[in-house]
Image 1 (cartoon, rainbow, N blue to C red):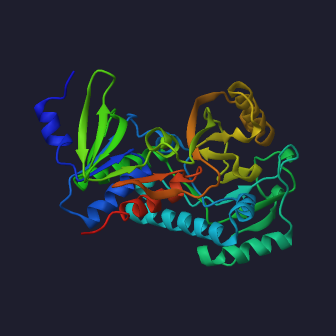
Image 2: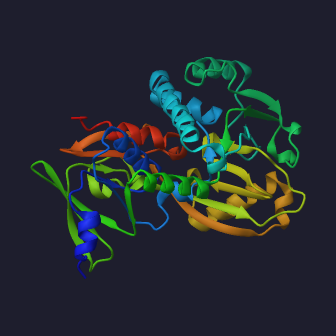
Image 3: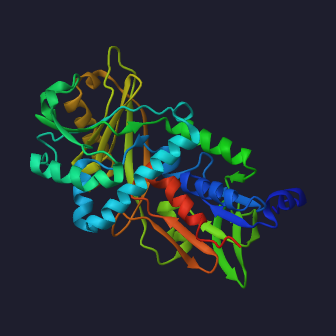
Length: 373
């Protein structure tokens, strides 16, 4: 089935910028492109009806990295590159909140706790290690005491299995992922950016000064869009269009309990250097991650439930009301890829599970890869 004249003429022709991926990065790139080029026709195409990937399926953390996660980044990336990554995450979070406002995002300044249970895979940093971490990260965050050791017994609802020492940060928060996505869509429409959902990009082909893009809704309704510029912002799935690119999908499982009476746990939680995470959703509890275990899906889900019940005894009598998987874009390291990969084609992928924090910064950088003239 071909597209109608009206569909083609209104949305698919004379495209100055085509953005592949309608999540945080793709829409942020479109926002920045609109600021720089008010006259451009900007089209965003997204295969998933809700935005897909991490943008509509994440756990809603506004975090820049737990203490042990950042310590690992320093080892793998080096102090300079790791600090620049933190700076991008922090700046991205401030941009997100300033753009939409905390009310529209459902944002809460909850503070975070990193736990080190006896069955976990990390140990609490020593006082000297934490002091060194605070000194290193201060230039990016603008505070001298981002992290502090606190006795676990200070937090109600946690069981003894949670360990004795926690690392807390007052700088972290959490948001409502659904509200965030609604805010992004509302802004896109207000800026005159066309967003088409349920449309998959099958191939890109550079031709002289343009890029030919094969798009379709299902296998029998396809067409070619000619765009002057393209940004690929499909994160974990960038390799499908970009070929040789160090990014691949990684699956995270997420579980949310049924509501619980008299349950009040206000903080976000990290464990195992960020590979495990938990947070309240009203009077429910969310837990996710577990890909570092290397187990099959059913075993991973069971371990997540066991961890949840071990740390929060109140959850033992609560069933699981929602269960889903989210897809991360990972690679050799956690630094995002933002570069021109073909003439007039820019990649903005591999967010390393930090899309909420870093997404707006990566989108901005991608849009600015194109000359302003």
